[in-house]
Image 1: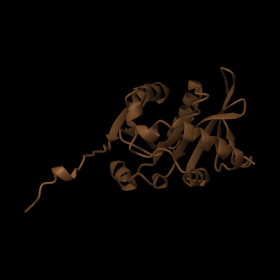
Image 2: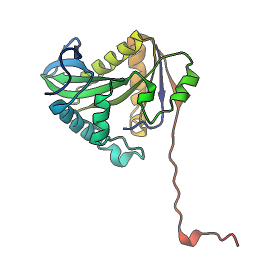
Image 3: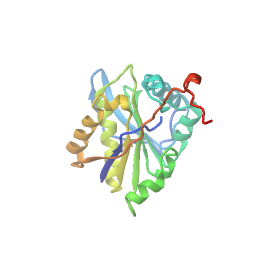
Image 4: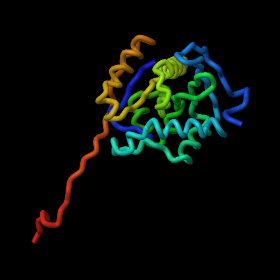
Length: 213
């Protein structure tokens, strides 16, 4: 498995039946039992809880990033129903506390150029890690590590190139350095930067207008 990331922006009953739900090893987390689950299609109360956590998790990005990271409910529900996307979520004592989605088809990520990745990796499968968040009221770091560990396992089993992106806010907090060390310790892969996207602006005032005549 190869890992790459972009330095620029990326957006931003419960659950499926027993035949599509997969349960992963649980770990005793501070304050409760941590479990990572996978659903092919999430609906109902669980979808409500995850959407609420997503909104609160990305709240500072509303004014801290030019890119819109917070989904509308319709956009979020479309991802939860998309069978091309593995939905991974962590619970502590049955309460959802975090999420990580793995797009198994680069065409499922509408803000990415599939042609870009296909030209970089001809003949390879490309997975994309997206929508990673922890509930700000329960930011257990072990939940994040277990979600990432499962996402890496899925990519490794498919021998895929795995891509992700992050925001300037997180870059400033050395988030990528932490992820790079985690990936190296888990699977021995080296993280490489693939692209970036930067926004620019300028003020245009009437008194500064230069006439062409």
